[in-house]
Image (cartoon, protein in one colour):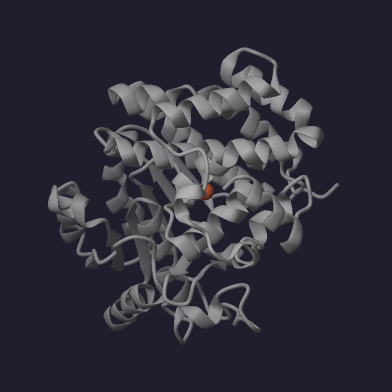
Length: 373
Ligand SMILES: [Fe+2]
């Protein structure tokens, strides 16, 4: 058995640890590129860090142009800015899209050309031959786990794709997980990102590529599933913290153990129908669990026991459906008026799909999609 575990070089998980960003940066560079969500910047949440960098004579360039999932144009604009400023490290402070864009910038500052020629699932994608500059990840939502993954998702609505820039070199050198940054997050974002994290835990635990280490991490984190409703209903701070932990662990588990069909089809729905990632995962998860139940009964039983106290796969499916229902997430795909099911199925065959326990090809996946419309 071969084990090969990759995770951020350093992980700090603590309320208020955003303040450590300036010290982290100082150890790496005297010129940093900071990708930050516009809301956070407007709210002044980065003021202390920027003042600290100034005090330490660290130059910084701020990019706050991330709107929705990173498009190739958005990535190239940021990369050109970072190249022009001669930055030697990158920090991302924001949700999954901000972190993904920041990760691309770190990867491409020294590697010529636009992001599209490096994306997987394209004809002979280029490799990141030159040095990837150090990347610090500071998540401000609890869901994608992007702070602990080695890929960044790039979406083109115009060309109808959602592909990853992926390399082991892209793992963050430091992840600062500060639950305070998630306090007061809007309910809709809490619901979507939280269901993404839950889907990542369930799919990484049952993935064909799971390892004993990723499974140990995933099953332990499943006891935090209940934090989502408390975070969503009451913005309870302990629950927010629990969700941040769940998200971090889901990122480590998926980066090292793969995912499944919910993430596979979510990629297709995002690329072709612009469905937000977490919402797509949440809608698909119960259906994918029913599809896999024959091969995953015991795994679902164990996850169910951790999450609900009942050792029953069906209890876990019911639990997920109840959460979706409460948070107003749809249960079927009918509202999308999907015209070309084969095209959606083709767009769902990315790397996540290869981890699904029940193997799905373009034909069987199309049949499955038909059944959940
Ligand atoms: Fe995800």
